[in-house]
Length: 134
Image (tube, rainbow, N blue to C red):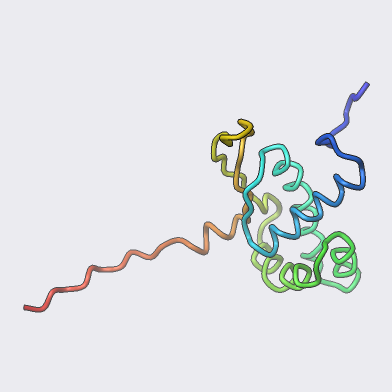
């Protein structure tokens, strides 16, 4: 029985599933938002929130641990230089999931997984319309 088992298997082996999650979190850090299916996003959100909590410490041990859990050195650098400082005042909830609807081919529920600071920093500023000169 699978009582109290949280990890979704996604029909993959353990190594394949681990690499899938590493890839999703790495791409989330590099691109700041990714489009994927809802179950994958929910699992990747857990991993992404944990890695941001590690990165907020900012020491060498945290950097090495993050490097072991990500695929690219650029992602580690961006995590420590941009993502973790943007989340320093938050106690959790570093990511958000925005549902997009179902995919046409297989009716899988799709969504966008993104950092919470992406929506806050990109808020448009209301500008006055330019005055016409006669």
